[in-house]
Image 1 (cartoon, rainbow, N blue to C red):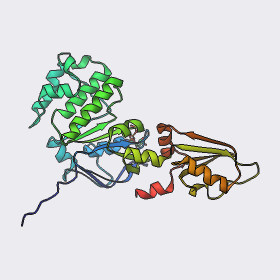
Image 2: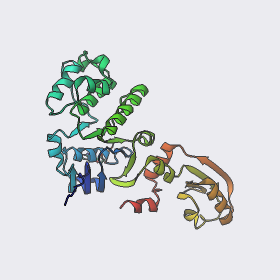
Image 3: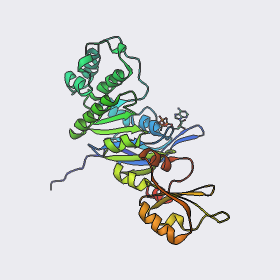
Image 4: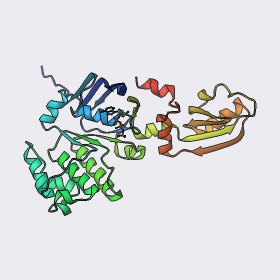
Length: 313
Ligand SMILES: Nc1ncnc2c1ncn2[C@@H]1O[C@H](COP(=O)(O)OP(=O)(O)OP(=O)(O)O)[C@@H](O)[C@H]1O
């Protein structure tokens, strides 16, 4: 009988916890990423993104739980040249030309991408003869990108990859990312820009205080964040009406000292039902920007809806 074995996922994290003394940077993360997926790890500063990335690369070990890449340890996958990485702290670059540097790293791999192609993919063709230590911040970031991709890795791990890039370079960068995932490369990148995650990933994993609070397509996450804002003033001397949180579309309720703000996925339905529930004054309906919606889900005000948390235990 002929049996086929499915390839193990590119990335698997099971019950991963990472503590630094009293700080629990990663607090029980389960995540599986298949070949060719383009996944954004989205979270605000200090959410735990870099800690996850470091564990994926074997630079850090979990306090508990397991991390595996292609079914083996991160160290094995890295030593095997199956992982390309671009981290936030850009290391000093030696005094050689860009082409020499990329060529040198290419020779350390068994099946490298041709150097000219790696340079072109990273947008470095024009500066290939320049000394690598005399480049602008954005060009230096592109050199790091070329070094990450020249080994033709199965998995690319990129920690805030576009931080130093201008608008045109960003666009070119994401275009290259598409080319690579179309070839079957798995890409995991971290960002704190919802817009960037939404536009450039097939799947967005939102991390907050070390936990995954959403894992879905950017569009569905955007919708579930609730970009509608319905605000009203409650009559003086009255309490916050009961049942606001269960009105149609409502994902969170905030009471800002008499002014009540509902975040909703459907403002029309919410307003309609609100009228039947209570008397309100100064009704206002607005749309939150994507970034604001994201801040809503991950802010300290505790407005993350219980239902979304429960989805991702
Ligand atoms: N080596 C360390 N020692 C102590 N605490 C650490 C260490 N590394 C990270 N932390 C803490 O762990 C938490 C998560 O940090 P991490 O760098 O993973 O966040 P991040 O999501 O990557 O943030 P940013 O977007 O700012 O890069 C933070 O509270 C941080 O201060």
